[in-house]
Image 1 (tube, rainbow, N blue to C red):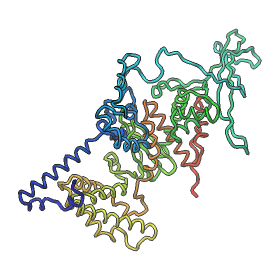
Image 2 (image 1 turned 90 degrees about the vertical axis):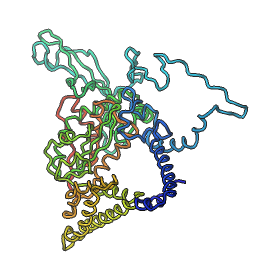
Image 3 (image 1 turned 180 degrees about the vertical axis):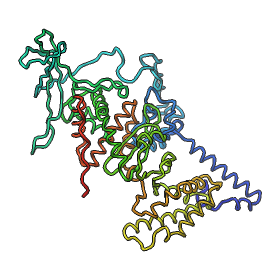
Image 4 (image 1 turned 60 degrees about the horizontal axis):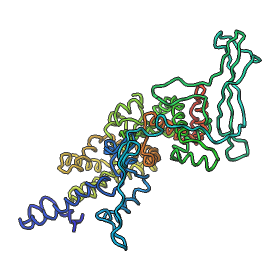
Length: 549
């Protein structure tokens, strides 16, 4: 029987020193047995137990040898989303382990042996082996065009305005004829008093016009020049998906967390519109490139706020470990995907932020002196000490937790009814006791206790700043809430698969969340952004910040 926390709580160095040799040997045997059991428990991982791949720490996923050709470890292992992890884990624990130990047995005797798998070939590798092929359509594979016939509801002719040879203006009545065309599917603008969506199919016809000089000039759709930051992401007028429909697709993919295949199914089932997953993916990446200039506008808004909440979470990109950063203000949110380094944050803030930075204890944030620490983070660490199996550590943790809880209650009370005496003077004894506990245990042998008290001492003034300014925030919940939606998205999609995909994801998430905070329709605003970007025009400004109530 394993020693309980109650048992361990009574054991310390002094107690062990008083034990006779015989009893000390017996206690050592019990402790050795428990240590081995706990080590086996800690050593469990998705490769040697029924634990789901999602239980791996992000840094282990990044260097997982199972990552194949940009597919994250979770996908390579066949893991589902987070909702299925617990059920799969429990089911595997109860059944499945014993069945694999020997041959299956049926009521009629031993079951027939399973057929062996065929040998691996270049066209059909064995399960788990790498075929050496890149994901997606292979070079030389036959393609196919659209099979759905669309009824054209509108048409637009595009004429060249000037002769490509002599540069002269082309007359409106000059001889012309169509040489090519494309259809654009879009959501028609709403009609006042009506609800629902109406689709339109516009045929864009490109004309060629003969000039008086005899040269025939052709109208050409606008296309953005190549951009090294957006390799293989085209931006231009010639598109099957119209701007407003593109905005809806982006909203479904990011805000509603639907996969490309699910978006395709929804459009087909609800609107009888068939789009390939390739077109849907191109639309999302094109929307990211179209929104790229808005990043500067978001940064300008972010660096001007008085208080900025910031947090980060792991984000896999094609098997590499990156981090999703969230810089949050009341009216704007900026997401960035990149390394977890000081340079990443300095580039985002352009070294020009002078407001208060609210964060957790990550060392990168310590480069900003004007900052605040998240007290709930500290309270959770003290709660961990208070629940320690080491009685001495538990008592220190409980006392520190009680002191910080009293100070937190005093700050909340001061916000409602300011006391006649300043809080630092009124609670000087509690602050001094907390400081004393940190100083006494800064070289403690217990690693967790030593780490926590050193963290308090290093950020002492930053942590206790709200005591002198009670109106300052005590938590970093704003940034954590801003990340929560995308953490769920990460568990479903396993991150992104390319640098351009990460950049598009962060930009579109920033625009969507900023629109939500400003009370604007995200998909309609994205539609106007995409429409302007496809013609090379200046993008519309971000939705206005609503006046405070």
